[in-house]
Each structure stands twice: as structure tokens, then as C-alpha cells.
Length: 406
Image (cartoon, rainbow, N blue to C red; front, side, top):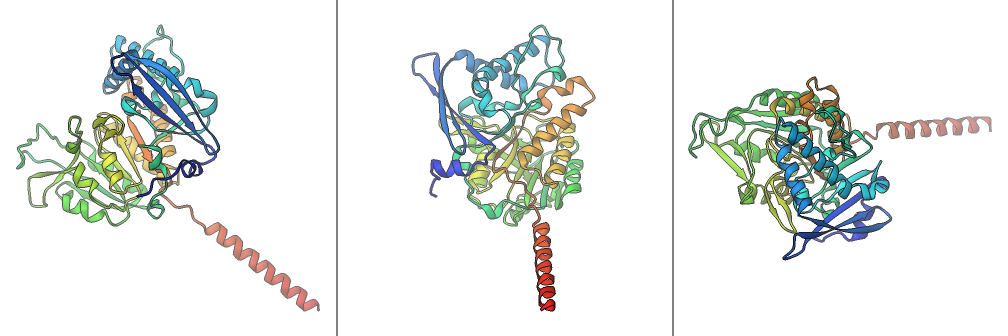
């Protein structure tokens, strides 16, 4: 496959898009590194270099660890928010005037791939009380983030796969014990799976595969049909070996066994879906390979020719996930782009959650969309057709009048 040129990448950006490409070069035998940020827009490329040290990576690690906690102590609240503000000052503030108000396509490098930029703070007062709802997260401001594995993944490889108004939804359930030796204690049936699928199918036409029907065979059978793939269930992150990143499905309809649909099995397919939604825990987690990024399920689906995915950076709350998928897919069905649908779904959740603790980024910030950002619903050309028909009718009438006068 031919890689797109820099000019092709620039031409592929919309006028209101800007691409910050972060590159980290760790300096051997040193506690320092060099961070280079390339800012790519349709008509310009510029860059900035800065030195960072172990404190930068410690803050990233702290945010990653505490983001996965549904509740924080006072000390964790203060430390996390101070780190989010400090990271903002390095990653965003130097370019604020260039990126604010634009659609921002983040290309993360190294540990930055574990960070949700939506939750960065533009200011923070350590003396403030422990109220998540009062914090100035970037998602509440004029910042619109989405992500890509690399600049090359933004190039439109499969334009014919961009749209679909049909969803294939999978919600496997897990037996007491299966042939792999995994018990119900290890893989419990998840609450709200059925409700989540029903919520999605309120907004899209589609087909649901519940419980014993969520088999590997049925999953593979729909991958060539061009529909959106929606998965809600358990996923395993291959943190030490990326090939162990996998979805858990049922082996056969009449079997009590589960089966693993792993990284290799996925990436060796040619999947004709415009969008894969992975509503499961840690589907964006995996093994970090220097220079390659995180090898996770999103990377596997991209290698299988899927132009866009939605994944999660940490474990997800079942009730939140139900609310999110309902609002997110409603907005998708209305014609919003993937990233805008997700941004609006996050804001809707933040603004409507009834408990202060649920404004914690743990509940909303971990959902990420990657690569192609097209709406999944193709805008109808019907109005244009009717305008043309009206113009032709008018011209015909004028011609008839002029001919009659002669």
C-alpha cells in the first residue's frame, strides 16, 4: 500500500482542522526527553521542540492510574488535577491561539496514547473544594479532540465504506464454566448489555445477537456486510503481549464455551465496516511499542481495513455506558460526525448527571474515537435534486411562454 504524501495529508484536512503530531525522543542515559510537536494544517506546517523530564512521565502515569478509579481521595483529587493542569501547560497552552476553536486531530506518541485530552484542565486552584463539576476541563471549552494512530491513517483509503445506517450488535453472556477453564467469577455477565443493544437499535435499523447467539461464527458472518459493528461484553487487553488483546464471544450456539477473537484473528480479515464501536473495558489498552504506539484492538481493526473505531482507555461503568451509547448513537443517527457525537454525548452526561461524583472523568473521559471522522449517515442529496427539478420546470415554462408569444 502506498503511503500518502505530506501534501495529500494536508489536502485531506478540512479548513477548520489542525493536526498536532506529538513525537517523544527519549535521551539515553538521562532522565530527560525531547518533545517535538508538529502542527499540521491545510496550508501550513510548523513545529516546536521542548525538553521534558521524568516529572512529565510521572504525571502521565499518575493521571492514567487515577483515571481508572471511580472514587478519589482528597489527596488523589488534588494530585490528579494538578497533573492535568501541568500537562495542559506543556501539551496545549503553547499552541492555544492556533488550535482553540478548531477540530483537533491528536496524533499521540508513547505514553500520551493513554491520555484523554478532553480531561486536561486549563486552570486549577489546589485550594478549591472537591467538586468535579466546577473544574475547567477542555471539553467544556472550545476544544474538539479526536485521535488517529498516525497521520497516514487519516488518508481516505476506503471511501465506499464510510456510511451505513445498519448495525450488527453483539452482547455475549458467559456460563458458569467453559472449556478454557474460565469461570463465571472471572467473566461475569454484565448488567445492561441487553438494554444497551436495545438503546442502539432504537436509533438504527439492525440485527442483535444476544447471549448464546453472539458466536464467533455469527460475528465473522457479518463483517463483510458493510454495517456498523457494535460490541458490548468483556474484552481483554494484551498489556504484556498485544496478541492477547481480544474480544470474548461464544464458541457455538449449543456450547457453554467462550472463545477469544484475538488481535491476529482480527487483523488478518478484510472487514467492510465503516465503524466498529467497542463498548467494553480497556479496548484501547494494550502493549505500548516505542515508535508504533499502543497495539490494541483498534490497531487490529485498522489493519483489517476498518476506517474508524470507538474504544475505551480504562474500565467502564455499566450504567454510564448505557446512557452514553444511547446518546452517542442517537447523535450519530442524526448525522453528526463521530467525534462531535461523542463530544456532545460527554457534555450531555456531564451536564445531566445527578450525583457530583459521577462528574469524575472516570465516567466519561475514557471513550475515544479514532481516525476517519465522517458521519455514518450519508446526507441526502434529495434537496439538491428537487432544486434541479424546479429549475428545469421553470426553464421549460419560460421557454413555452416565449414560444407562445412568437
